[in-house]
Image 1 (tube, rainbow, N blue to C red):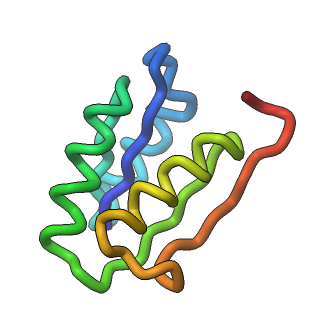
Image 2 (image 1 turned 90 degrees about the horizontal axis):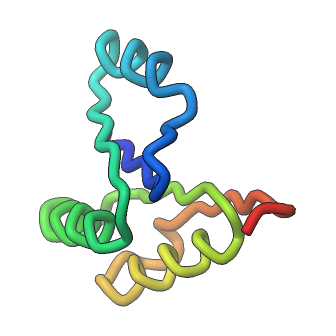
Length: 89
């Protein structure tokens, strides 16, 4: 399992907790600070795991943007689960 955490301010809330969870389970966490880095990681993921599931959570504009990018990279819509946080921009 791969977790991509994007925060342009590099604040990474709950970083210690996520790192602790990742050390006990088979989860890799990548901390990213730009959309370009996110797109590179998505490209790597989609080239390796054609039928992988993607969970996208965050502010609605970001969720929509990332979901659209995933679909353009041939991730079926049924494999994309979304959780939009309303009230954030």
